[in-house]
Length: 392
Image 1 (spheres, rainbow, N blue to C red):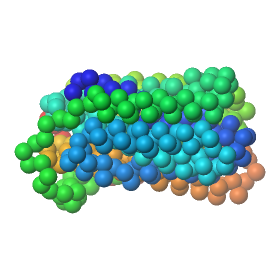
Image 2 (tube, rainbow, N blue to C red; image 1 turned 120 degrees about the vertical axis):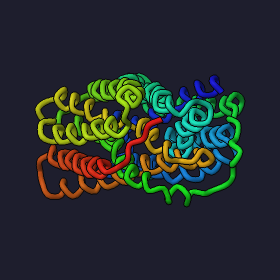
Image 3 (spheres, rainbow, N blue to C red; image 1 turned 180 degrees about the vertical axis):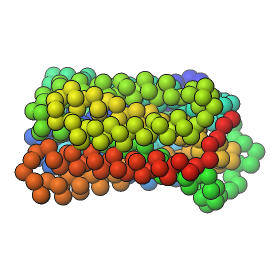
Image 4 (cartoon, rainbow, N blue to C red; image 1 turned 60 degrees about the vertical axis):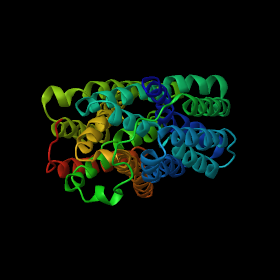
């Protein structure tokens, strides 16, 4: 189980890479394929929406079939095919479809790790171990920054994506050969997803999980590259450097936040203040981001802390989920988390288009997007204030 968990964590690096690489790759796709800002936003949104839609079936498969076959099949067949299609894309819609396929293939990666941790380790250390997986997985965000910019300059985006497709298929095959499913609990098979919706405590956690990852995934992973390119005339490497430090901070922040629930004796307040920082720094980026590349870069890095709270939110919710519904429970939470990003990403594209039609200022549409994220995160954090804390 330990070896399999290490393999899943390594595979999760690919998931983090694929959800973030459009932030650096976007300008290249605009030049070669003529993609607009809204099309790029839709491509990013496709990854998150398909990923989210797959969560409930994947949760059922974890509880009934097991994570090994579920994860191996989706990583190999869906993510591998999507990366291959992306490498061969000749039109914007190819990229959007490819991102949807990649999202489907990435959908079980993190949740398979969470499922194994929940079944094989004490509940009190769930947030710590889950945060380590998330933190290490965020090496993918780092790889999608300056290293990706170097690869694009050296080999071009098609060769880069073709190589990633081969690596993705290899990881899918290794999961099928190495991963071992945890033992089933005695009540396996009883209950359904409807039982989860009957748990009142989850309803005040779902709004915050739906918005906490939005600023990090959408601004850092998609909008900031276009913003730096159009507002600050930044080079590909400069964009990569900004996203590199943002990715580094979310990786370190995820690992640091993991044990805080045990140290401070609370999950609720660790999550609340972490998520609230996403609203604060999104607003600061809207107000002062045009002061320079590194001013924008610092605020982008700091708003990423909001996304670092994810493992603690899952731990908060998991405390209310029956053991035999672990797979469906954690994937339900993840569905709202990733689905929230997909919806917010698509909505942010509409906000950008609406603002762009009303101004000649190149920075103002981006500022409207940053304000949009600040407001929705603040709303989610406010609802979460009424939630019940959980401790193990």
